[in-house]
Every structure is written in C-alpha cells, then in structure tokens.
Image 1: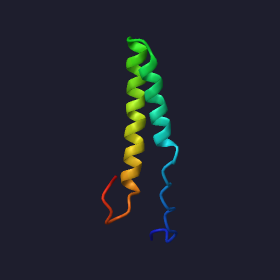
Image 2 (image 1 turned 45 degrees about the vertical axis):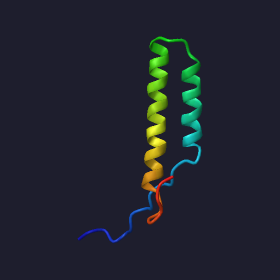
Image 3 (image 1 turned 90 degrees about the vertical axis):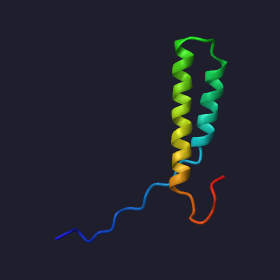
Image 4 (image 1 turned 90 degrees about the horizontal axis):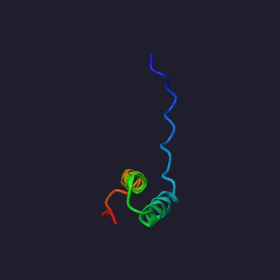
Length: 66
C-alpha cells in the first residue's frame, strides 16, 4: 500500500538568482579574452538558464511570461 503522506511542496526559486546571473555576466565580461573568460561566460550562461527555468516553473497560469 502506498504511503498516504503528501509530498512536500516544491521549493520556491531564489529571488537572488537573476541578480547573481547578472553579476556573473558582468564579471565575465570584464576579464581579458582567454580560457578564464570563456569559462566565466559559460558559468554566467548556466546561472541565467537556471534563473529563467525556475521562473517558468513557478509562473502563474494564465499570465504571459515577462
């Protein structure tokens, strides 16, 4: 028989995720061209993707995305 306890609600997105992604992008852009900059830009892109994905998951129904 299945356990009747309900699943915990999903975690809400971190409101600082978008700001963290923006800050990482600014830092990456300030680096001189080279492998460190490429790695920093990839990290900033991943942070932006995660921030956008969490916003989509928790978007209200019936409202268009921003």
